Length: 205
Image (cartoon, rainbow, N blue to C red; front, top):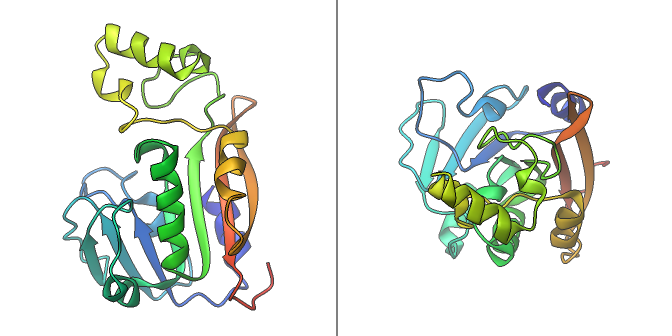
């Protein structure tokens, strides 16, 4: 995923980037992995519902990406590139996911990246349980609750998306262009990368 993203942006003029949904965990190598491995970017910022103290980020805003953003917030944090890695499936229902995309667009000067796991990969990487997430979402959530995974049984905490769901979300907007790329694991599509460019950006896409 990192290689594909860095290849796409290697000839783009990106000065600053903001990470959406940053974790405060600094112990595990996987934490904030995507933003920390982007190349040729000078300034990094963060928006998270967790308090971020990492010196990697020049500045951080403690706020949910589905909140209403003040004009002053947008002016301070608007960046050439907005990065949201495996966050959109954790913000709740379809309406919240649309609000998140709308806020990302408001915060974007040029480009954005949204990554999310494919609902129809045989294994859900959150629960490590195969296939039951292919069931209707109401059945899936009931099973998770019954087997003790109450956190992931709630829509506010896990709402997996298919490529059809993503297109339905993205096609409601006229303010950007986008492309969807596939990442495969064990022969199946495991993740989607959405690369978007706002219409005010004159760079090639």
